[in-house]
View 1: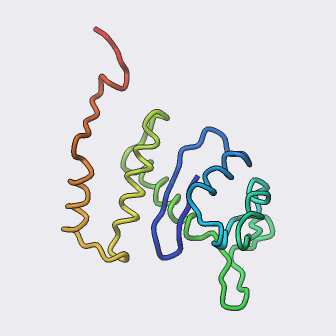
View 2 (view 1 turned 90 degrees about the vertical axis):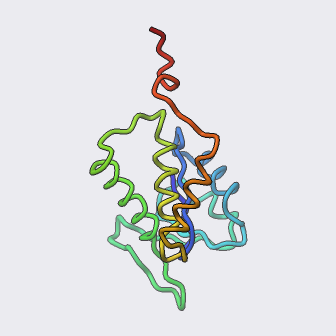
Amino acid sequence: MGLVERGGEVRTFHVERANVETVKEVLFRNIDRSSTLYTDQAGIYKKPGKDFDAHRSVNHSQDEYVRYEGNKTVHTNTIENVFSVFKRGMTGVYQHCGEAHLHRYLAEFDFRYNSRAKLGLDDNARHDLLLAATGGKRLTYRRIGEAAH
């Protein structure tokens, strides 16, 4: 599941089940309820969407991908782009991802998106952020499998 602020940052989550309860929990923990929520027509967004200041959706099954409402543009293209880049990275760079590590791959792509040049970060700033985030963290192969030889 992914959340993105237009022109801002992204947060992605590995959720076990994509249902109303899970979606509601993620939305409520991460989005101010005075915000406008933009989604597709999936039924899991209808009930949680009522708790936000506004909820707008596009109907992909009717070939609707963008709609203009006055000065507002209703679309889900931003988050769809995030997942497109993630999927391309998984097939083109990593080729495989075990479920135990999915949250790590998602975090990497969140970092890449959230430290892009459009948000004012250059390569040096991104490098410094990356090094600062690695302090005290080490993941070894054996720790994941817990295999004893």
